[in-house]
Amino acid sequence: MYTVGEVLDRRARKKAQTRAEIRAVAQRLFAARGFEAVTISDIAREADVAVQTVFNHFATKEELFFDGRTPWVTGAAEAVRTRADGVPPLRALGEYLVDRIAGLAGSDASDERRSYTATLEASAALRAYELELVVEAERRLTEALAEAWSAPAATDDGAVVPTDPGTVAPLVAATWLAASRVLLSRQRPLLEKGAEARRSAEHIETMAQRIFRELERGLGTLNAALSRPAETVTGWPDERRAG
Image 1 (cartoon, rainbow, N blue to C red):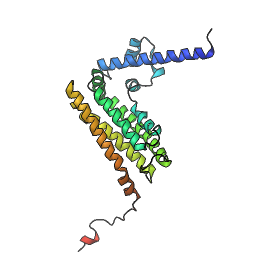
Image 2: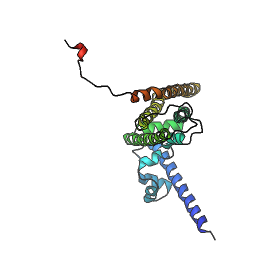
Image 3: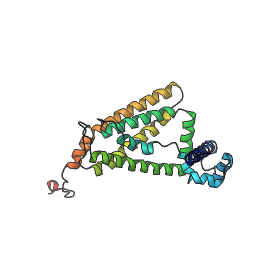
Image 4: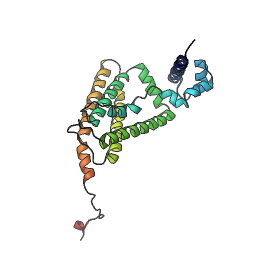
């Protein structure tokens, strides 16, 4: 006889297994046929489950496509919240983003990654859903940075702390995540097979390290700019040009 706990564990494992199987089937079909050409009925039939079972696990096809593929939605915020003692928030964020960019740049040369990218770029629905994920990632990172700067750790020695975290946090979140996306999208054509792909991936990683290092240094300038009293705008032309 199974205990109640064992029964629940078995059900949870079965549910997770079914979800994983549905996701694998769906993503394989998307890659083979294109996102719009595949229906939920196609996925259910191929996975040998009922259509309702698919919807029990995934509300939309877009969720199915991105499931398991977007750790960056929560990853940036978690990197800030779980940073080691003595590591300033932006240092932790930069290290996380460089690692993610390096990993994605290297995998862009794989057939699986190329297929994922091609399917995504060919679908307006997927691109729109990706933008929703970007907004969610920015929101989470904004909250994590605002928390970190509102109660800075005593061990974050020498790190600049914004005087207005409520303004700086969303600016930083939007800028740093946008920089990551631009680096990957603009450099993607360089990621060919063989040695050239490896050199391109290494180049992107180096660029990422330099960019985030400069952005971290620029926090002091941004902080100073926001701390200055607002100047009175008198219009154009000003009095010096009058007459």
